[in-house]
Length: 289
Image 1 (spheres, rainbow, N blue to C red):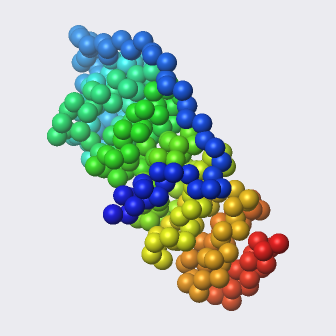
Image 2: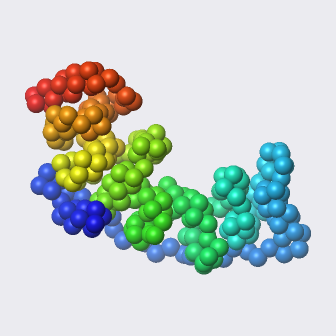
Image 3: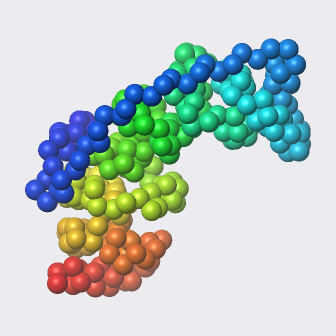
């Protein structure tokens, strides 16, 4: 329900929204060559390295295995993708790092297609990682791929797709980001802030600010956090209503949004109620001018 209502809300730009230019269709690219099939010693070495990466008892053994896979190169990618379902959560970060050592940006689409074809052997952590790689890439078809993943059944995949689209100024990202912040902010706010650090402010500010006074209290708090990530000082006056609210979390979110968006200062963690009231009053006066 939240996602549907937000999608309708964002279908047309608010009056204050800056004009956005949709990027031109991506020019056609020559498809990458298929991953080479490993044979003989290369196949044996890759299989042994993957086994060591999964079962090796020492970091040195596993690092050497990752170097072996990197030396084999793109031919090791299908083996890693197909064998990922055997890795437990503890070893998954090392597997993903090893994959990155073999997987070039030009092959991301090919790797995604191959992993999606594995059906029940697909690995959620690997899917999210591939989408994150696509989101952070310069691939010409990245926008088209990410738009298709906004409705993915895995919220982590949808989130990574939305993050990549937000960095490209695409409004379609906002409902997924708002929902993701609503669900994840309390436990992941440091990582979320780091993921959006340096994002160009402006293209999505007006659209994000249109969510500030809508929905439940929790939805409004999430909207203020979203504005902290995407907003610009020109729209900060819309935070005054949240600054006047007696709810501690909503008021603190508004103070932090003001600090980050207007002054470029870091957010606060948990000021006392007295400190918070004073800061809210000060910011309200500043925004009124």
